[in-house]
Length: 186
Image (cartoon, rainbow, N blue to C red; front, top):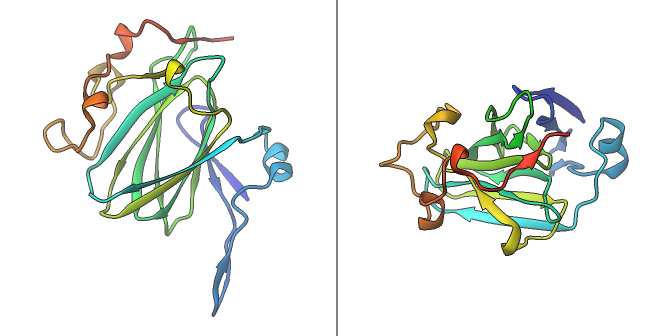
């Protein structure tokens, strides 16, 4: 397994090895010992699988507040996504900045997003499937989000406001400057 840095030091692209032959391939996508050795020392409690039938589907930007804050390890098993993490830790030197990665079933990359970051993605292909592990259970009472189209974030999405396929909930999320609850940088 190798790691690649992103625009934010806490966000990492994880590159698991794939060993292949005529039968296909084998890949160890999560190993607690190996991840701890590279500084991602966490326990996962939930595994999510999302199918997105259409290119241009946008989900996010989501996060959960403590005590239910989540770290996420995101990967694509079919198709491709433009993945984004935004620093929502007040007082952080990178507050409001973002990191992006293109995750595909072919490149086999994963994105590690620790607590304190909002997460979202946009599908780049039809029939894209995303799987992600979380460090805390989903909690509707702690669920928050930032408007994906917030101009202050300066994210260059592969869709426009008019063409994105977005839920009503995500379309109504407040901009970062309107957030009532954010993480405090330690």
